Image (cartoon, rainbow, N blue to C red; front, side, top):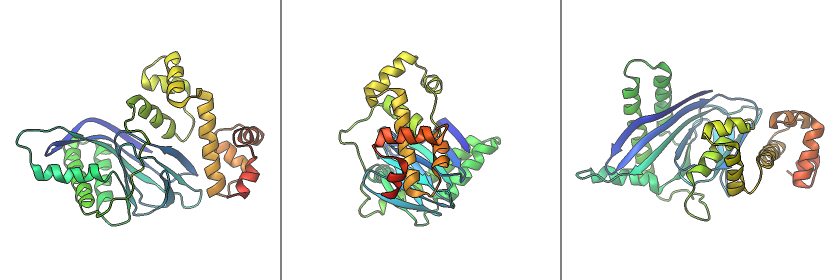
Length: 286
């Protein structure tokens, strides 16, 4: 897995400023599942090989080689990929902030607004985005002299391609939004920590990442999730297991190990306590 974070690469388009936050690549791996979540920024997903599923609040989308997906702020989404022909993923996270400036190009403003108006799409059309993302990742890996300037140019090209594609979408796909507008940056950070991990993060990892005390972390868990850390981890593991039970033919022991249980028996008890039925009965309903 490759992952690079950036805080100083910005490109202006009219009254908008595009800020690059992250570039990453996840290679095909054993079955994985990311629970539906959302961010306060934009996330671009590009698949170059394998198969998987993108989940929104009400829909499922097949993710195959050549699929490009954009999930914008407050758009619920999650992903899964099975053991056979597991998919890879190139990911770019960025923000589009409205910062009016005297004398800005109004045509560029309108173009970028097409992205903010179409915060979610899934397409298999060849919009030449994957090539640009791969070039960005190569520059980030190389760190050759001038690589940040190269990234700036490539990021500019990426945003333009996205905007031109969005400008031609007659009716954008439904964006899955919160019932109530607005989302806390703290909640978004917690969501990203929990849902982006393929394993359960420890309390120490979380409080170090957020630079907060254990006591404050406990208060945040109750405020945003209404449950303790242990209860949240159980929820993540069981939801992950439910998806694997539905979408794969993995054995119960393999699923138990994959989602973080030390034994099949421990997984069986926890699953029944959480769902009211054992994993075997749940699988029969798929």
